[in-house]
Image 1 (tube, rainbow, N blue to C red):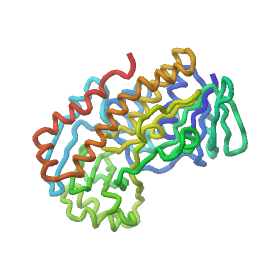
Image 2 (cartoon, helix red, strand yellow):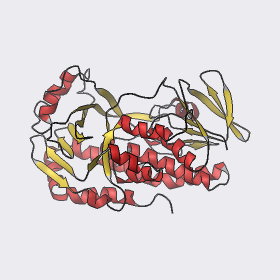
Image 3 (cartoon, rainbow, N blue to C red):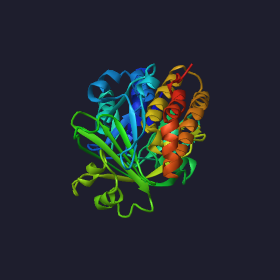
Image 4 (tube, one colour):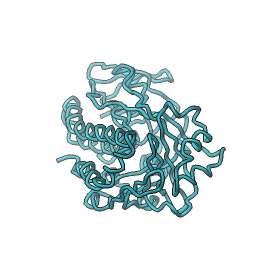
Length: 369
């Protein structure tokens, strides 16, 4: 079987690793000229680490990651609203871990054979061609494949060319992401909620903390660090002072949050995975988790054999309800945190633990029977 994966982000690299473990060789093309050398942090819940275990990478991941066993939510004034022992929910699934995004992609890249990824080449279009799928590349080449896996992210050109444009929609929230020196005050996942604004700190090592902040896109302005400081000036410790003391020249990743609603992203010998198929708000912290799960499930179904059409249909049927759950809960959580502060605070104080368990327990269930 000849397989092409388009996009060397977390989804694409995971798919290549999963197929390799099943004895299926593949080609992977990436439009960027080289692997990313920078990035902020990433938080992996237990289902994501379980999927990385299925890829044989969990031990290496744990050696680089910071364990997270609780999640703490505070008001912007510093009052604790909820403090849940998340390890109890995930104990039979996998550990919750945080690390730099570059570390995770590095683990995935090193797990592949040299030469698997070709950088600086883009898949421009793909069409069905008899019993193959023909792909046209930016370097002028045309090749035929038995299966094409689109994993080029939320603004995937290949998705737009094959399934039509406008699948990605902005959800009205824009974020900042950066990494700062760990000041010792943030020892677990810690969020602070203001009126329509969220500030999050997660230690990714003993020395570094991942900082995430978001606000309504109408408030974002030019996205400068000065705007960030102004919007979060009223936030107390432990996170407010970290933002207040940010260096004006600090490296900051800014982006509007987008959603690609899960639907039937399969065509003749062509399938989308990861953010290309189902990008959602990060409020469930499932972007990487869903992408890695996609890779594990797809590779397992491919290894079982059968017509490609049936394999892709099984993949869609297996994944759709799980991803729709994540997207629905992401929207609900965004609505709660951006609504009335008084109502939100009461709900989190009284029902925070139960809401967390009810939201995430379905994701602890096996991926495949």
